[in-house]
Amino acid sequence: MNPADLIARYYAAFNAKDWDGMLACVSDNLSHDVNEGGRHGGKGKFAAFIAHMDECYDETLTDIVIMVSASGTRAGAEFIVNGIYRETDDGLPEACGQAYCLPAGAFFEIRDDEITRVTTYYNLQEWIRQVS
Image (cartoon, rainbow, N blue to C red):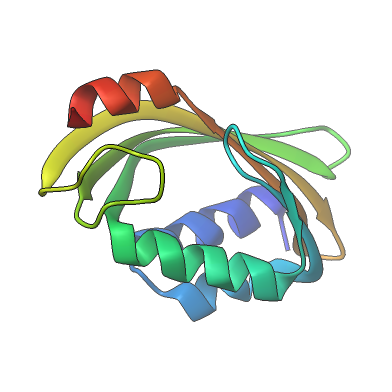
């Protein structure tokens, strides 16, 4: 599969809240780097992360731009996160349905038509400002 198509499918599944479809795009040995957090390994931990995020946040990504290296083994995406903070997440401000909108990006490694690494970045301080 074309790497850009794989990343587009991953984000289409995200926007459709098709978590199984999203998980179908990633390797069993996925490395997931959480924004301002640690690295989590494996599809199972990624599935748990997705479930937690779905409890706390309702997000849609817009203006997605996908860039792929000439080798097809690395990619990046930039997008706008449009969300509602619906349940308080540990260590963050209290949730009461606040809306937020901020730019974000992700980097990917791809092997054998699967995403093997996802690293996501956004400005946490700006997100906190918007929901506080």
